[in-house]
Length: 272
Image 1 (cartoon, helix red, strand yellow):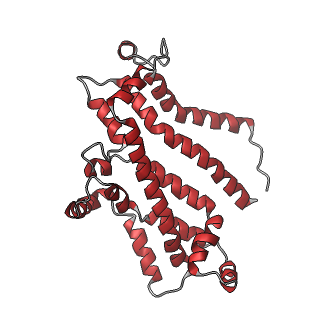
Image 2 (tube, helix red, strand yellow):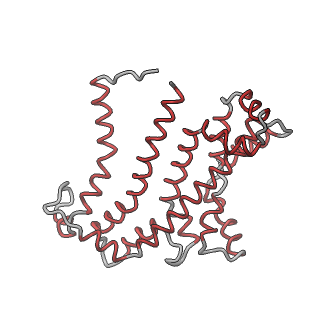
Image 3 (cartoon, helix red, strand yellow):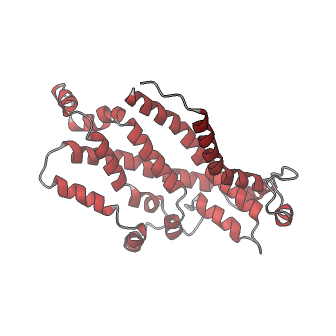
């Protein structure tokens, strides 16, 4: 099925919407290229008089950036990978297997989506403190290894997969684990990429849980380091804060751009 060409008014409208979404990020980047006196003298001036990289040098000198990026990458990728690995069999069981209490189990999965994370953090923190796992990657990753949202998304996507396809795989000798991890993933590419993006972006930018579970640079994440930039010195060094936020958001934007191509290709292939 060929895509309909976009009309001129539609293109203009989408361009305006894109500009509205990009304007804050462009302002952040331009502010990071100014000096602090220039920001104070003309805070509403959009363009710097001279492009400066001093804020980025100061940001790199103010925190162990490489360690923070590594810690955040391990946490975000680890959580996203575990959520994908566990959402596949959970969604498959709720969508395609027949067992007593399946509806109740699915209802409990949905009910967990209604519980705020702030309600769970006290008992979870107490458990990891008793196990002496604070300030570890285990404490950062393990509480989010299972995603109710991921289970729901995989289950809903599998409802449209014909049962005859799975029966044919079983007749050919495929076991349940082979079906889950070899046959289903190619059929669920848009769903899995969407889940990966949602999980990675959320946990890459997560501030609350790493703040609770970490106290030193050994496992501290990048959002905490960027937040500390604002607290250093006697005043807010806006150019350095903006440079830190550019560094924080750049990897997420790059990964989203790479994954978006695969996502659009998968969606186009599934609808053609």
